[in-house]
Length: 131
Image (cartoon, rainbow, N blue to C red; front, top):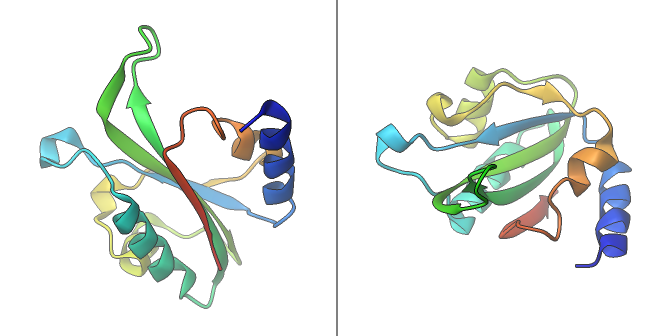
């Protein structure tokens, strides 16, 4: 994906009105450190079934060392959703059927295009839109 395509994709995603985002990161002490595409689809399809969530975008990003650039075998999932309100980690875990322990704090999406183009086309191994 070229830089121009990445920007256009980010602009398109930012027009959908995503207003909240979160991260699923499996903890290494849990014995699981990688989220599969199938799990991402299952989590996001469960979330988008809720009446207060109309759309979800998710992407899988590999973990890497910022200083050395070394890629680890683990990954994490960034997801943004269009919702009436910010959902607590308890609500998200119940809706998505994921352990609360793996969710970070839900934050509002600020600078939508910047959020969506952060890693698009560089190192994402999977991304999808759920409606």
